[in-house]
Image (cartoon, rainbow, N blue to C red):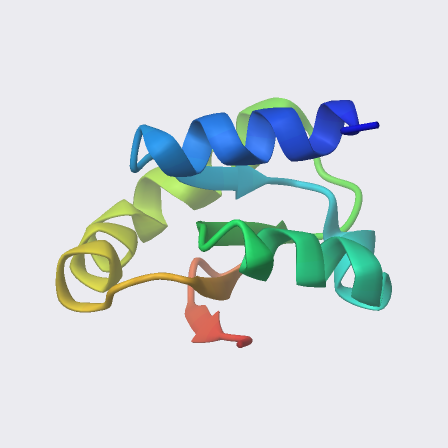
Length: 92
């Protein structure tokens, strides 16, 4: 049986979309990280602790030029972390 997670990951990959998630605990779940990689996705994980949605939006807005630069220069799959100061670090 195919899980719902695999279905949406494959759909995102097929559309060549980019994943943005605030599920920072995913970095401690190897099976979920492997699922992102296996789907050959480009993913950005926001690592900013317990901040309000509006603050997360501000972090992403400030980081967006760097996010777009990474997307334009690097083929997937990759996983990058976006930190509270809007800096980006490639995780995998």
